[in-house]
Length: 187
Length: 245
Image (cartoon, chains in turn green, yellow):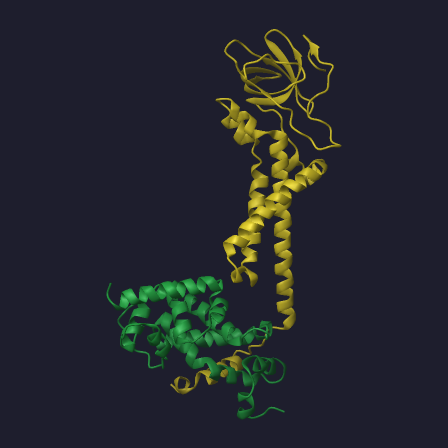
């Protein structure tokens, strides 16, 4: 009988989904807690506003809850929920036809693990400079770059999130890195 | 303000309770998958059948045959099977759109998969035509407008020469109509060889009741019919100086 937080921690996301579906819907909040910080950061990279990012992630979790029985537990829950947030973020952008303002895009206080991206680059730039350059990337390149270097997702997971072949993911990441290099160096 | 202090998990939990949100039942998703699969298969079947109809209509009506003459564009456009083309395109487009919903569509290059599906539809359409299915469906009332061929109009006629006179020929169409086609020295005959009784011709000109003033007469091979179906050309003996009954 699982009834404590410690017990839930021992479950994988997919086992937790099965538990929510078949036993206790209240445990859904545990899934929310596991992903909210990462998803808020990801949504923020599109909408550039803390409140809008909160709305996007909240709506995404509600949609995920309603469709939870349609989720295939043989797949990764993380890819599924990232995909929903990705779509919600794009819908939000379309809805507001928001210009990618450069004024307030670095104000998020959410933690970013920039280590892997900075390691990958053979030039030394500040974390702020890199995130600023990422925000200037077209969405086609920004999404895979963020998912791989900031969200630490594998190519296969990115393929599932963005619904594109793995080869395309690799191409986008490589081109995105080159673009990022040019943007950061003002070329 | 109180709501702002709540964690995201609490806000979501509150929304689920306040709005009485429920998980959709598993049957909903199973039904969705089944409908998606059925829609995909139906779209492909429609596309394949109508590609078969297009091949059949092009084979029997021969719209491209009119392009041999300088004034052939109007009868060419009139003989193109537009409605089957539109239906086949809708079937192909619908099938490709539905295919995008399947997981395999993004695991591999989608354009390659879509191209493969479209080429397969084309090949299966040709196979459908060779089986004679469109010809068998020709007499079914609902499909008749799509399949039943027209062989004459006010400005063109296609059929078999059944009699020959000095300045006129009698042309019978497969659907039982007959016309007296009058030609002069100004009539273009493509290729410029003698007209022969029993051969298939396409004529462009101007119709007046049952006679035709020909501007162009084109010798053409008789459209091919599948085995077991009546041939399009009218069988002899052919007569001279007499109209067919």
